[in-house]
Image (cartoon, rainbow, N blue to C red; front, side, top):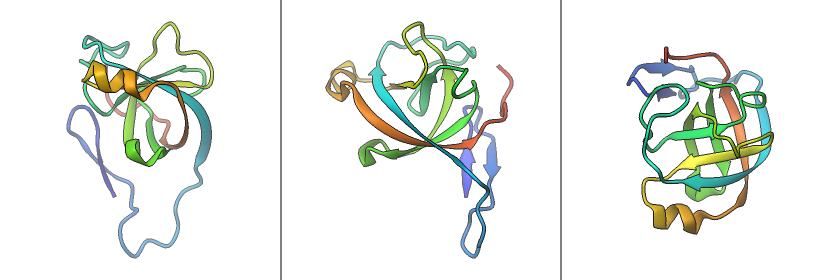
Length: 122
């Protein structure tokens, strides 16, 4: 499976057809909210879809996560922001539309840590 970082770098996780073994993963249940205010993230990149904010004590900056549920938001995201209100088991998704971000509200999410390593330089 190819995953693209915020710099466009392609990372191959070897999860393509024919792969029989996946590396051990960490599954977390968090509470998610959404934000829509564009700007520079804690890691120095501009906000865009695919970026989330998390507490770095739980999910370190630049980690790749997969949102498993809710299915509407399922996919690969990169933790590139923190946020003063994002403590412990909270996640904040960047959604460009403020209407959609407010509609997202607060909901439980299940995430899988895909890669905890620092993938790109700030």
